[in-house]
Length: 98
Length: 259
Image 1 (cartoon, rainbow over the protein chains, first blue to last red):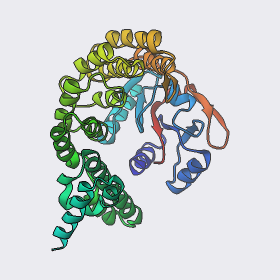
Image 2 (cartoon, each protein chain N blue to C red):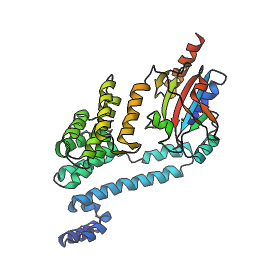
Image 3 (tube, each protein chain N blue to C red):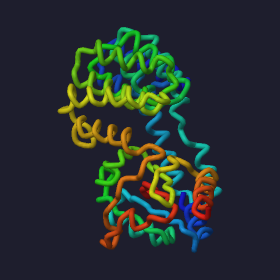
Image 4 (cartoon, rainbow over the protein chains, first blue to last red):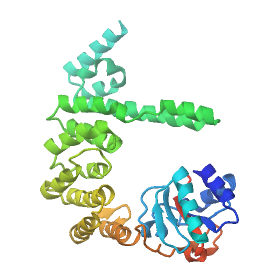
């Protein structure tokens, strides 16, 4: 996951795009991961385990779980990864230009 | 020669009915596995799988390059590969409690593999009233067993143990939510029944009522085409930020953990 996310964020730098994480690790482990994996994107720290308030509200029981939102904040895709994720983001960026 | 000696030892152990002696010999006994009681055969199969898993963890942990890691995955002990032996064990001793254990092992460890279908069918046929059926319910959700929905409904109706009924009802709701297109209303009704009938039962996210509320929230508010609920929280350094700060941008939300 990390290399693909890194390249997505790098490729879309300067575009109206944001990758936002919701992380379920203990604080120290999250800090380490951000450093080690050179994460330039932000993550909410969800309380240190998989039953944090955000994961609970969003009823997330499997990781990773992905939601893609358009520029109006509407859910447009769920659980897309790899190339389909790139294509979903590209399609939504195109909508903004219209 | 060596094998024959082991066989004699185990036959003696059985003949003199010293169970602890037989247990001590379990590991050496695989050559004469048919001689040992079903519960021991079950234990040694589980042991074999667990050992293979531990070996795999060691190899993967020691792998330094991507190539070594790929190679290490050749040694991953696929639980599907053990299904046949657990199934045979259950079929050979249908009246022994081990039969249930063997079938449940398949359901829990290899439930989504096509090989598990026979195990689910056998559990549905012979063990529908078992007090230990709860852990099997969840593995039906992503199974390829065609009778999964019927089996969950039957467990809910016929199993005499309330905790098992609750597991069956909750899993049925999840099955309908995940596997049946366009049946959101049906799933909602089931989760509402779970709250009313089994709300007080424990769940890893508190109670079944809380977990079912989570399912209802997802069914009602997290569909494609709906506005995403606000997220407010802090980053790892304690800096506050919220989802609506990013309005006007395409956003990928990634629920992740470094594991």
